[in-house]
Image (cartoon, rainbow, N blue to C red; front, side):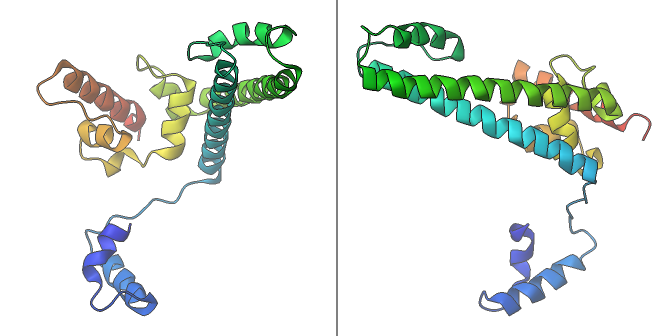
Length: 201
């Protein structure tokens, strides 16, 4: 991580100075290193990231479709569940001009394709979560399903990297206010994650 190497840069920033700083930082006994992931972990991460990309594309297309129809006075609430009403309007020749219908039909077909691709990756994620012992333990925690369990096992650093559950919560991005109910619940969930993953280690 660049922030850990920067204090060791002695001169102006250039390739030679950066290389020297990296060598100096790597020799420090307290330096943190990124653990090497197995091929299986990398494959699981690719499945998860591929699904995330397709979900973002689906959201972009649905937002574009909603915006195009709004220009002709047909407004639909956010959410994929409300796109069926727009699909019915697009199929109606009297609702929008033919040129708009043809473009929106292409967008609807793209959404249908993305839905099928996301469903296929969901099945792959569920399969991987059932085969992975750590993912199975993580899914015993309330609120954690196959997707979250797979994401944690594929993307999160080893539990030993974190001194306590709160550190893991901060790494994930869960930063509840102090002295709140959310803080205690999130910390407890993070501790259960660490216990579930470390059990039998």
